[in-house]
Length: 121
Image 1: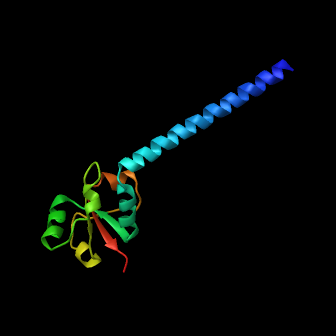
Image 2: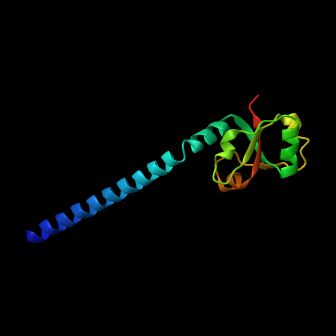
């Protein structure tokens, strides 16, 4: 009987340890999200308006600025600042450095310093 009680107590202690661990992890995630001041939500919102994404080089980004394209402010709020533009497909086709990237929050997209996004029609 004492052995069964001991085993039950050990299982309960293990369960409580796992619950405390999950709660600590959740608190850390919420703290990180709150410190970002909503930048990830804003970035996902910008990406939701895009049909396609292309990485471009610095000279093409300057060309877009010269023709009046506006840099999206959310890109400047990232820890490694990015220049993000919404560009019509006709203008994008004239950019020689364009390289299509997957329209996901992944390493490839976040590594690009300059993004040209094609909006939905």
